[in-house]
Image (cartoon, rainbow, N blue to C red; front, side, top):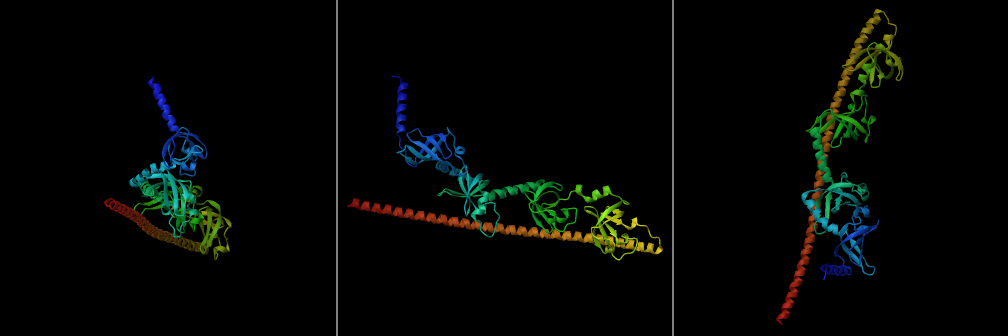
Amino acid sequence: MDTSMINDAMSFEEMLDASFKTLRTGERVKGVITSVTPTEAHVDLGIKYTGMIPLSELTDDPTAKTEDVVKVGDEVEVIVVKPNDAEGTVLLSKKRIDTDKNWEAIAQAEKDGTVLSGKAIEATRGGIVLVCENGRVFIPISQTTLPRREEPYEEKDLQQFLGNTYEFKVISVDERRKRAVGSIRTVASEKKREAEAKFWETAEVGQKFTGKVKSVKNYGAFVDLGPVDGMVHVTELSWKRIKNPSEVVNVGDEIDVYIKELDPEKKRISLGHRSEAENPWNVFVEKYKVDDVVDVKIVSLTPFGAFAELIPGIDGLIHISQISNKKIAKPSDELSIGQTVTVKITAIDSETKKVSLSIRALLEPETSEEESAETAAETAAEAVEEKAEEVKEAAEEAVKAVTEAEVEASEVAEEVEEAAVKAKETAEEVKEAVEEAAEAAEEKAEEAKEAVEEAAEDVKEAVEEAAKDAE
């Protein structure tokens, strides 16, 4: 007799027996995906039952599609959820098998400090739930990237995380309940520290960046450079004189900056925003020279003269003695703000960046000795007033130095505040750990109590049996 025919017959018999096999709830079986629909996948188990895996039993991710998880021809291991002998179908779950398999990977990740990646699929009052290839992980609010605040966060505050993918570390596991707690903040903090260290290794004066304005103070604007923040002093924001940084920038603006000064020890960066290409003084000296006659606009009046705009950012002084060829009591007797007048450039001081203008030089000169003496006296007065202007600028520089000192004090205060916040976070973590330990101890006590009661019952039964045997 042909041996192959016997083997084939036996194989057929085995297959026939298998086709009549019944399934039990909780049994693990293997099969092949035969079709995929938007709501479920069908599985050939090699028996009389038709296997069905609903999407909810394929994955924990509510946003996933059936075809993203399995495809026709895939071999899968599943667990029997509910057989239906009358209809010849069986409800299966792939997710429950995966959960058991992947739990060990999550527990190992906690031991190794491995960085995992997961998508936020659910927001609760206490935090968010991430689903990764190894299962579900809970992220408490304190371990998200939300900033610390006194009032508690609500579930709606966490909606912004949903649908996004985050890197995290597993920080604690509950082996009995197979629950894991993770931290996005830990990974973000580690990456920030690494980025900061790399920044300070390569940072140098003159480097250029495009940063976003993070906050605006009276003395300057803080700019986010990515790993670190830098400050642009109010005097470095514009070539024009401004009273407040908000005249030039607002929170959220992207601006081009460059490093002016670095202090790696104090982790402080001074930035510049004004560029030499836009320096109005350079534009002025290229365009004008002494003895040029130009039309200017009066922008301000003082007791000793009038300031007139030559080009945006550059003003010249028309001393009171140079406003008219006759003596006047005050500049406003002849001039008004906004008025356009024709002047002659009489002096350009590149060192102090000052320009002297004269209307009088374009008028017919007076020749009397009295007026000549008067002119000499006025010229001397002009020199005194210019010196006074220099003193004023020196005072402004002193004010700037004081402002920078205030900035330093403010930053120190912020560092102290951050340290206090970290201390508070540590206290909260200790509190959580104590509560978890207390809960675990309570559960252990309950388990021990049950074990003692079971042991006592066993002893009682043993005694009763021994008594019967003795009789």
